[in-house]
Image 1 (cartoon, helix red, strand yellow):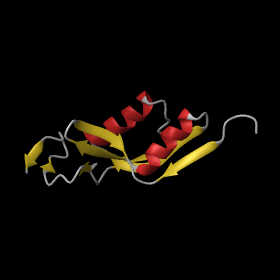
Image 2 (tube, rainbow, N blue to C red):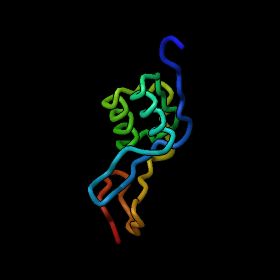
Image 3 (cartoon, helix red, strand yellow):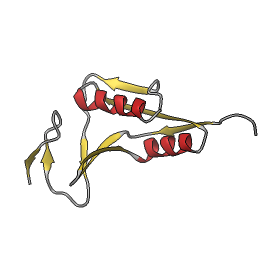
Image 4 (tube, rainbow, N blue to C red):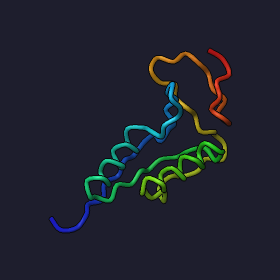
Length: 101
């Protein structure tokens, strides 16, 4: 097969909140990234909030070498961080600072 293959990761694009900080994640986004590492054109297709976290997610995609042309911005729903490793804390969606544990 000649050239790269378009590989689309369709689904969530989210922030995993770990004890060491936030990390961009979501299985479809990870799939798109790994596809690009393997020489294909990996593209995430998702929808994020039109808020600081959503915009930062799109910027992070660019830093990783992924296009964000298929990542929509939702004006009504903020990006939602996901607590990792059994975390029972809640976070401010604007700053990802813990508000309670």
